[in-house]
Length: 325
Image (tube, rainbow, N blue to C red; front, side):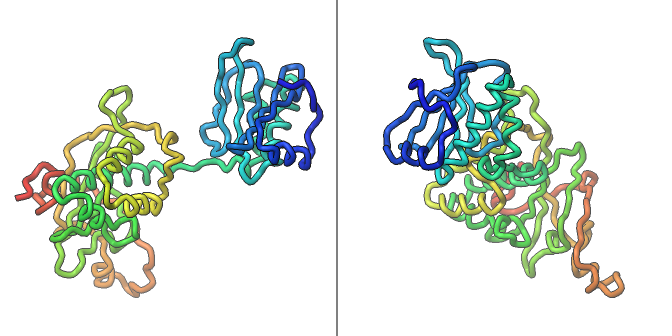
């Protein structure tokens, strides 16, 4: 490491280093030792400092990582910042951390103090809510099953839920609305008055999936696992599948944020949505509610635990334990 340039760099000096297109190592402080590595080829900055205290948890930060490295001189923390398009902002984050380190604070404390000032650079990552996570998981489990019978092209084309269609799957002979719950009972949230409204001349089935948290069970699965498994089965519809995932808020770069693992609590079940099914639909609201045009948003929960599940036709059958014949 070079033993110079211990003062804060100016923006002009930093751009000179990036423009040189060679790796540069600078010593920023003596106590504790702080070394800055500038790598223009990958547009990254690294701060090396002797490991002290716990390693900071930066998994929720999109452009920052921290690793622990063993070298001849001992154990070091390496704080790496993606500086693409934000050279001086990235350096300023590191400089602020170094200031805290030289003031006697540990790295995990210095990082926590610096996050608030550099929120835009760090671009905190966001994951789907638990409700959306298990909802997507349920749809992917059914998609995985439908691929077995129909092949990837027909299966991906049938998965229309991410396109904000009324129902999650529109298959050749049947529609399906997929609902997934962590409850011990089959209690499902219905978000609109159209979700359980059958389309004209098309049968509609509610597919009920119950999950439970896997704990230490070795056969548990998470959302990242199922996304990866389905993706390996898709060759011709990769763009369509990726587009569907993006539409519902999935980002590949956030896969490690989905650490929860689940098991099937019970075999999935399907319920035919006919006139006897307890659904609040627009047609039913129009028939009993005065001035129904003033009712613009309907959301409710339905408990189908006591209902007798049916045997849906075609590609839905194997998923709920029936026959596709």
